[in-house]
Image 1: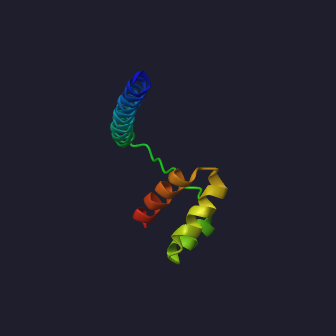
Image 2: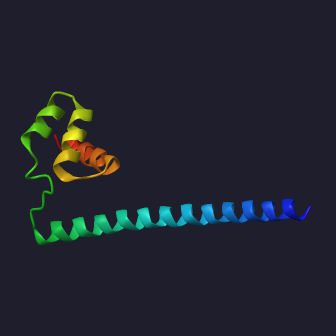
Length: 98
Protein backbone atom coordinates (compact mmCIF):
# COMPACT_ATOMS: atom_id res chain seq x y z
CA UNK A 1 0.00 0.00 0.00
CA UNK A 2 2.80 2.43 0.78
CA UNK A 3 4.36 1.80 -2.65
CA UNK A 4 1.13 2.89 -4.32
CA UNK A 5 0.94 6.02 -2.16
CA UNK A 6 4.55 6.84 -2.98
CA UNK A 7 3.88 6.34 -6.68
CA UNK A 8 0.80 8.57 -6.54
CA UNK A 9 2.74 11.27 -4.70
CA UNK A 10 5.57 11.09 -7.23
CA UNK A 11 3.13 11.34 -10.14
CA UNK A 12 1.43 14.32 -8.49
CA UNK A 13 4.76 16.08 -7.95
CA UNK A 14 5.75 15.39 -11.54
CA UNK A 15 2.45 16.83 -12.81
CA UNK A 16 2.85 19.94 -10.65
CA UNK A 17 6.44 20.38 -11.84
CA UNK A 18 5.35 20.03 -15.44
CA UNK A 19 2.56 22.60 -14.96
CA UNK A 20 4.97 25.07 -13.36
CA UNK A 21 7.48 24.55 -16.17
CA UNK A 22 4.83 25.18 -18.81
CA UNK A 23 3.71 28.32 -17.02
CA UNK A 24 7.24 29.71 -16.81
CA UNK A 25 7.97 28.90 -20.45
CA UNK A 26 4.84 30.75 -21.56
CA UNK A 27 5.75 33.78 -19.44
CA UNK A 28 9.27 33.83 -20.91
CA UNK A 29 7.88 33.72 -24.46
CA UNK A 30 5.50 36.59 -23.72
CA UNK A 31 8.31 38.61 -22.15
CA UNK A 32 10.49 37.99 -25.19
CA UNK A 33 7.78 39.20 -27.56
CA UNK A 34 7.22 42.32 -25.47
CA UNK A 35 10.96 43.01 -25.45
CA UNK A 36 11.12 42.55 -29.24
CA UNK A 37 8.32 45.09 -29.70
CA UNK A 38 10.08 47.60 -27.44
CA UNK A 39 13.39 47.22 -29.26
CA UNK A 40 11.60 47.62 -32.61
CA UNK A 41 9.94 50.81 -31.34
CA UNK A 42 13.28 52.22 -30.17
CA UNK A 43 14.94 51.38 -33.50
CA UNK A 44 12.09 53.05 -35.38
CA UNK A 45 12.13 56.10 -33.09
CA UNK A 46 15.87 56.58 -33.60
CA UNK A 47 15.51 56.17 -37.35
CA UNK A 48 17.95 53.30 -37.47
CA UNK A 49 17.81 51.01 -40.46
CA UNK A 50 17.99 47.42 -39.24
CA UNK A 51 17.49 44.47 -41.50
CA UNK A 52 18.81 41.20 -40.06
CA UNK A 53 18.24 39.48 -43.42
CA UNK A 54 20.10 42.05 -45.51
CA UNK A 55 23.08 39.82 -46.32
CA UNK A 56 21.06 36.69 -46.95
CA UNK A 57 22.44 34.50 -49.77
CA UNK A 58 20.46 34.92 -52.97
CA UNK A 59 19.88 31.17 -53.36
CA UNK A 60 17.63 31.21 -50.27
CA UNK A 61 15.51 33.99 -51.75
CA UNK A 62 15.48 32.20 -55.12
CA UNK A 63 14.10 29.02 -53.51
CA UNK A 64 11.39 31.04 -51.76
CA UNK A 65 10.41 32.69 -55.04
CA UNK A 66 10.11 29.23 -56.60
CA UNK A 67 7.88 28.12 -53.72
CA UNK A 68 10.45 25.73 -52.27
CA UNK A 69 10.04 26.67 -48.62
CA UNK A 70 11.57 23.46 -47.26
CA UNK A 71 14.64 23.87 -49.47
CA UNK A 72 14.92 27.51 -48.33
CA UNK A 73 14.79 26.39 -44.69
CA UNK A 74 17.55 23.83 -45.32
CA UNK A 75 19.71 26.45 -47.02
CA UNK A 76 19.08 28.94 -44.22
CA UNK A 77 20.10 26.34 -41.63
CA UNK A 78 23.32 25.63 -43.53
CA UNK A 79 24.04 29.35 -43.87
CA UNK A 80 23.23 30.43 -40.31
CA UNK A 81 23.70 27.31 -38.20
CA UNK A 82 20.17 27.82 -36.85
CA UNK A 83 18.00 25.00 -35.57
CA UNK A 84 14.95 23.82 -37.46
CA UNK A 85 12.43 25.90 -35.51
CA UNK A 86 14.49 29.09 -35.69
CA UNK A 87 15.17 28.60 -39.41
CA UNK A 88 11.47 27.98 -40.13
CA UNK A 89 10.51 31.16 -38.25
CA UNK A 90 13.18 33.17 -40.08
CA UNK A 91 12.05 31.90 -43.49
CA UNK A 92 8.43 32.71 -42.64
CA UNK A 93 9.46 36.28 -41.71
CA UNK A 94 11.43 36.62 -44.93
CA UNK A 95 8.51 35.17 -46.88
CA UNK A 96 6.09 37.66 -45.34
CA UNK A 97 8.33 40.57 -46.39
CA UNK A 98 8.28 39.62 -50.08
